[in-house]
Image (cartoon, rainbow, N blue to C red; front, side, top):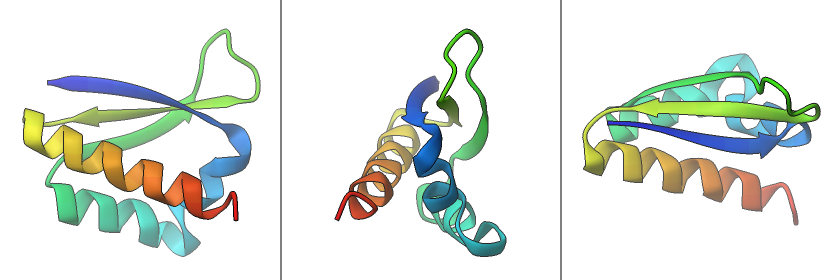
Length: 73
């Protein structure tokens, strides 16, 4: 299963983390393959692509959302 999330460019550093620590954590905890790339046709946004089982995708999606919410505060 593949799921794409669109996040603001400003959130990218939080999702990747220092030296890739946050994205590595998301990958380890979820078991999903997680990549981040520029969104085509959507300036100011990045696409987080999550590939795995339904459960893995759901876990990774929740972790990305938590990281994005943390930088709002």
